[in-house]
Image (cartoon, rainbow, N blue to C red; front, side):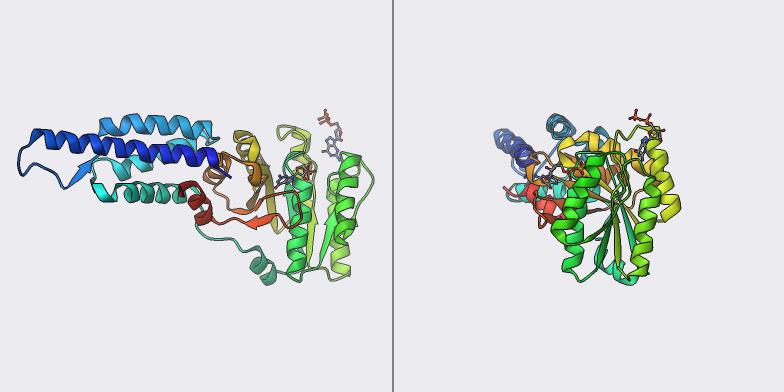
Length: 319
Ligand code: GDP
Ligand code: GDP
């Protein structure tokens, strides 16, 4: 994971060390006693070059322009004109990067979905949004498994009524997991399907309703109207946007669009196991200001991990 971004960050640290070597040689060459500095200072000119390279590297690794700028700005503030001891240079740069990346990955608080559900009235209603192919249906199945493993009962709602294939797909998951699915015919009103699932949950004292939704292009006006109707009718407790980390800035645009239209509460990023870049996680959190709840790390039901900002940043910084 994140091999490419990791490599670029390593190169960045290497370049600061080159500058340090040069500075040390220079101060030795002047041979003026007393002027020999204890540490080195990165000048505006020194920084300009390496920050410019870092900017290109970040953008190439799917970090959105807006997020890249936020990262560079904060790094520059941390590094410019600071006297850094030669021996501590590597640690100092890494710490600066660590703090910067953690700041970008706002918000700070960890979201514990289990404790939220435990504290809430039942049934707890979760609706999943996102475009087709991102792994939305698989993710719903993974979340169902996770909640069941934590002693919660589940009903699924086949809220993507636009494609017959989508209903079949979630049906397969419901059979594999042994979970009840509420479905209507293709073309039915998605809000009504989810409404029925909630009714079923109430009647059978089921803890959580997990609802799928349709996901054609996020720019489709009808789709957004349908999503708004789903929310109006069913009042979800949590609206989760599911995005494919491999689609980079597209995932960020989609998240923004859904957030603007219906207001999302949290994010799940799929296919992180195949993501060499890692930039979409940084951008999506930075731009939407919504927490990343889970990441998908494979095709199996177990391949769902709680997102941990510290873990993510260490993955990028470790050499
Ligand atoms: P949907 O159209 O958004 O509902 O997408 P699906 O749930 O059908 O998933 C599309 C494909 O992505 C399937 O082959 C899934 O197995 C795969 N997939 C989903 N999540 C992950 C993940 O976290 N990692 C990997 N490697 N594949 C995933
Ligand atoms: P598109 O050209 O495939 O994007 O289809 P349109 O957006 O023109 O939709 C045509 C009609 O299909 C609309 O008037 C809706 O009644 C219905 N429709 C469109 N999108 C959806 C959807 O996501 N779910 C459901 N249930 N019906 C939809």
